[in-house]
Length: 120
Length: 110
Picture 1 (cartoon, each protein chain N blue to C red):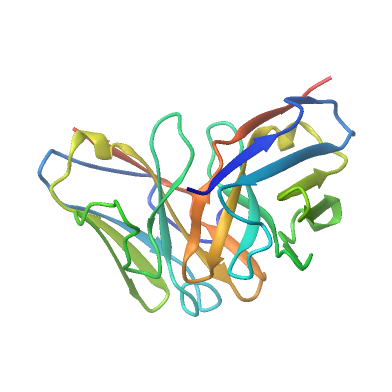
Picture 2: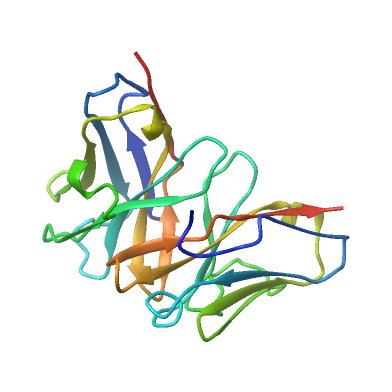
């Protein structure tokens, strides 16, 4: 059974870079059938797609965050990662990683989420 | 402001049927499938409906989805207390080249 697990610091200082990793178990990030994505949810708010990556490294980024985002994949570790630079309090959120089946199939497997607080 | 528009709240009594709407545009729901996610209190989202009207394994057939033009809908029949959750619609947007979500609908079972 496929499982995704987010990891990374729970507290990041303003202006610094947020770095999170999603570890895939029970499946392969190198599968040609899926993209792998990051989604976040600020406290008390809705879901916001951050970006997605294919095992080849092809990426799609949310235009509103594109200048600050880097998503990468490490097939040897079966992981993919998110870096968000120049963070502010507005980046405080629960960050989820998910497997994307396709535009038709949606995001069918999600990690449990990790809370990141931006504060000095 | 979310790209997809949902009502912020909905409610019903046990056994009732409720529907939640999701309004988009030609570049998202009008061109691609609508998907629905259920987020129970304190948990992460779970795929509820994909490809407009398909249920993943394990999702009760009380949940159904439909699409017409640039709008999608989620219907829940035989409402149960455990259906109390936030529901989000989503679709791929060809103009943004990314996923867009609705703002979410909080369903209350009275």
